[in-house]
Length: 177
Image (cartoon, rainbow, N blue to C red; front, side, top):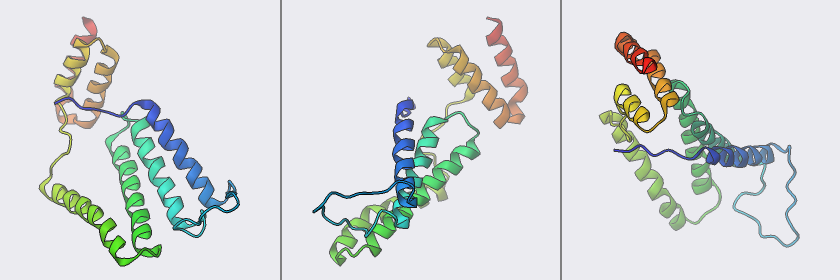
């Protein structure tokens, strides 16, 4: 199974848009709606839900921008993004004055996503299974990416100390070739 990742330019888009929304909600950037513009669901862009949505975009952008950071940092940025997005959606669905029928309609996908996430967490399932580091490094070298192969092995040495000797031998052999 081939692991697909976001392109790096998408990180700039997520971080830029998230930072703009966050600064807008904090009042650093002023919002000037045009005359006669319709009022949105939220009374002002300074609502906390707007800021939390910006935080979710920044967290997702950081996860895309730095895929090789330690896993605990990736988990932290993904958790911040997920929790912020869920908080913003709950505010939007339940506290913005939507009619009951629309609240139920919008809450179905949110409830399904939460149930699937909890079920996968309880089962210990991974959405995208990781390749063995030796196999991943072999594939990367085969496709002409020796620097990335070395980075994969070095990261595996840090994260799997019980296999450090085996992975270091593979790294030394690959560097000699």
